[in-house]
Image 1: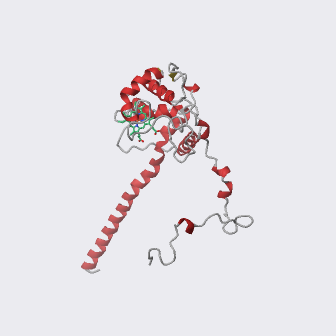
Image 2: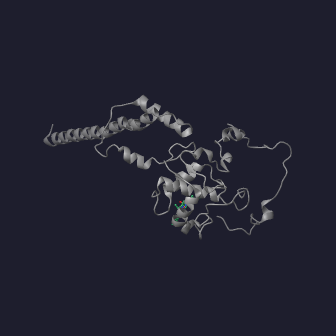
Image 3: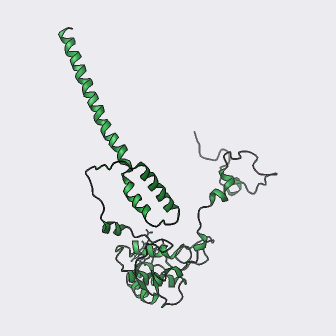
Length: 271
Ligand code: HEC
């Protein structure tokens, strides 16, 4: 082998060597990632130990837990972050469910709530929830949902009392969210329900205990997604593409009549 050839061969060997090291290195994190994926196992696995809550979300959670437990690989640490502390989790875990799960302790009446509402909410929502300016309306709208101008409020549209408690607790007063105490929260919500005729006695106590007695007017119009059954024909594997109407189809209107189809030659030029 000539000297230059020798050098070339040596260089090639070094290059190949480097390449294989590179492959090995880039292989490493990939392998780590694969084994790391199911480390989310801890959280869902703990969830699974709780009494099983009903509903599709819970079912999904249980399924995720089952998958995670089945995989159960060794724990991998990336050297970043730390486990969330219980009080940190509690700060985020504030959802209230329709069955009352997650309700904070407290009690109040519409009478007490009125004063709080006027002080903390009325500037935007109006003293009676009618809205000041363009802020959301919180009361009224009963029976308007099917009209041309539906007014969607807690009384006319919202599904559950828990939705009101959850929302006000989480997001209001706008700009000072999550500042209400338990008693203030129940008082204000009682006032909102009073404005919407859901509670008719100003002194009726609303609390985490009496909560199940409150039902919003539109609740029954919320139901589980039944499209798989109700629209079964739509989900057929082979949809009908021609002559799908039985008998002779009746023409009810023509686009030209309402002037949406440009007449020949008058429309915009399309190349
Ligand atoms: C500074 C103005 C402001 C104040 C004060 C305020 N809100 Fe609101 N509120 C808003 C805005 C803005 C929204 C809409 C937020 C959005 O859609 O993301 C809203 C939405 C709401 C809704 C949902 C309305 C709907 O039908 O979608 C409720 C209920 C509500 N506020 C209750 C309250 C209560 C109770 C208080 C007092 C504790 C309060 N708000 C104080 C501005 C305010």
